[in-house]
Length: 328
Image (tube, rainbow, N blue to C red; front, side, top):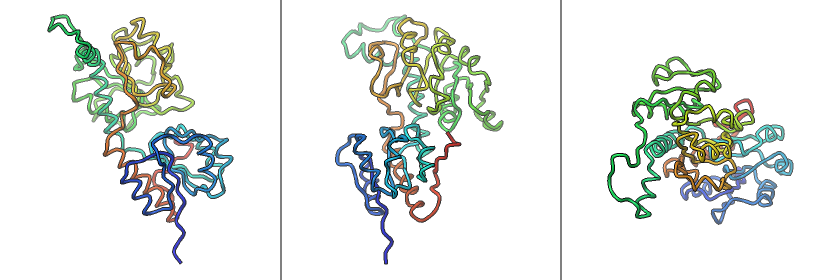
């Protein structure tokens, strides 16, 4: 007698190739439109699913998990970050959580460099000048930005993405500095020609560009708070492609408006789509809609990891990308 297929609920529209493969392997309930599930829809999904394929737009907290059905055994997250999932509560209920680490490393690092260049060379300002018909021609002192070669780049979080950014920054002639929970191996430091700072405050105060690549956890919430942001040099730039909650957005806006720092480049925001209304009005800010990992190749690879995690679980083995509370 053939083995009963797992019941899998997918909370968002995924690339067609990924949805097709999921449908071939499992008993899948797909999303009809590309909107996030409401809380009521999530509650309903958790009642009779064996596996939930979630995304970062799904807040899966302890209360939601408390109402999950007995069948739920795996949350296969489509994405590397799992700060939207109460992993500890899931573990206590016997629900495994997997993610898709590594696949967006190069994409995010590429976009980080694009944002560093965009902020330092004032590309958005130049685009607006052209689009508004305000450009009157070349001038010696017009639209002066910063040369990247020789600039000190401070990397907050030296994981996969931080290291990939360091590699790219070295190619631009930037000096690489970093702060991390744990110092990376000597051979990694040597390869990246990276200087480690144990004291974050001391590093922040000396950098020309600070780029953030750490996850959102209780320990990193507002890690870049008002006090620490004020340590930045007046000609420094802040770049964030990780999680918006790491930066005190209101404090950052106040400093940008006052000219206390040169500029910022943001792909993520503290309150999701509820962005501080002053941010879009500022000339010295590059703003993107959380698109650092948005490549066709990356999204397909994320889907492949989700499928491998579910298939491995279905075969009675530990998902290769299992998340445990100790990792967070």
